[in-house]
Image (tube, rainbow, N blue to C red; front, side, top):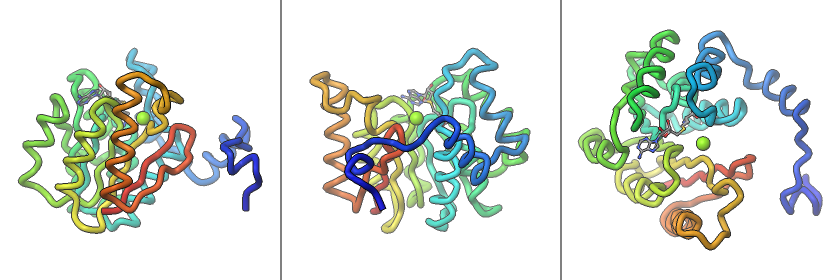
Length: 216
Ligand code: SAH
Ligand code: MG
């Protein structure tokens, strides 16, 4: 159930409620805590997904029965760890990262979690890396969380390279509150939404940042 306020976007979340549901449903073990803390510790931007969004990635990956997943935007490997945890032992996550320092720290965190054999960190601009992954298609899940200006191109790639029934996921789809602005970036993000709406069975889940889910 909802009411007029919550249907219009008002939130009943408080920091205390969020902390309660995070620890009740999505608690960190040592490996997750390490990966989550890494950006702040290593002078990287602390822009990893939230704790509950991370757990949502785990559950969606499980629900999709995913064996092959692509993530665009690794940072320190927190969301990669959340996804990789949902894969069977012979499953594989390719996570794409432009910044070699981020990739190295992510690799350390994934090794510490014992998941290194299930995850490959691919260094370079994502669009070029995606090209090299086409021979591994079809994929079960594609998760977008890197440069927002690239989302439309990444979504086009996902539409071609996902299996029927596969999932496209995209974080920050509210574009930090600027989705309806007049800037070129906002326009491009709206084109991304339009593309997904047209080519997938889709929704933008109203997480704080907006998480697009598209079923191919
Ligand atoms: N998914 C991560 C957060 C990713 S932050 C998590 O939730 O834990 C976004 C990352 O995308 C940054 O590490 C940034 O370096 C990377 N990035 C930005 N532009 C990119 C590009 N063109 N190709 C690949 N990675 C890119
Ligand atoms: Mg994000």
